Image 1 (tube, helix red, strand yellow):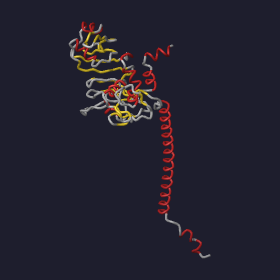
Image 2: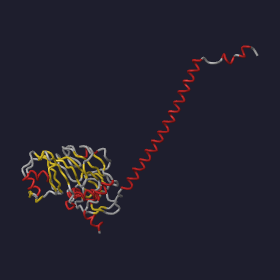
Image 3: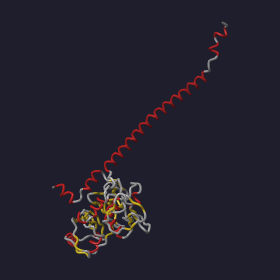
Image 4: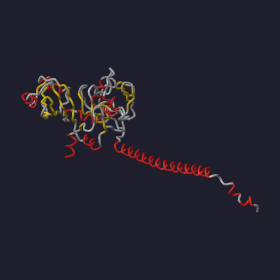
Length: 316
C-alpha cells in the first residue's frame, strides 16, 4: 500500500468550519422536528379539549331541550313558543290578522294548531323553538323594549345580537328612558307566568327625583295612591341614600304602564332617573350597563317556580 493511500482518509475529511456548519444544520433540524412534535402534541390536546367541551354543551342542550309539540296547541301559545313575542302579545297579534295557518288568516288566539300545520307571521314561517334561552340584560337608556321598531330606533335586541341564534323577546317592558334588569327569552310559558298580574312578580326600582322627597309625601305613597286607573300601593318604600332624600327605593308588583313614574308625578315630583335593580329575584350584579349574561341553571329553576299555583300543587 502506498504512503498516499494510507493517509487518504485524512485527506478527504472536511475542514473544521464545514464540520461545524454541518453540526449546526443537524441541530436545527432536530430542534424543528422536536418543536413540530410538541406542537402536534398540544394541538391534539387542544382538539380533544374542544371536542369534550362541544360534547358537554350538546349534552347540556339535550337535557334542557324542550321537544317540539306533538299535539295541537293554541295559536297564541304556538306563536309565543316560536319566540315571536309573549303569549299575551301573541293573542293581540293573532286578533290583528297578522297570523296565517295554512295560508288562511286566523284571528282566534285559541285556535288549535296541529304539528303538521304551517303557521306564518307577517308572511314568515315560524316553528316552536326546541332550545329555550334565558338572557339577563342591564338595559341602558334610549333603547326600546321591543323586538322591532318601525321607525328604526335602537331596541334591546341590538344589545344581545351575539347572545344567541334563537329568536328571543323581552318579558314585560321598561320605558325607553328607564334602565336596569330586563329578562329576554323564547320560553312562552315562563314569559306568561312572569307577565301575568295574578302572579304578583316583585320589582324593585331606584328613582332619582328632581328634589327631596318629603316625609309627608313618603307617608302618603307608603299608604297608597288612587290614580286614574285605580288604587296602587307599593309593597315597600325607603330612602336609598340616607344623605340624599331625592333617591328613593320602591318595591312594587303592579305591572301597569309607567306605574312608578306616575306615582311620583301624582305627588308633584319629576323622575329624573329610574333604574330597575331587581326583577323576579334577578339583579344586575356584575352585569355592566348595556351588557348581558345567560341565566344560571339555578336561576332558571327559580323562575319556573314563580307561579304560586305550581307551588300550591307541590305543597299538596
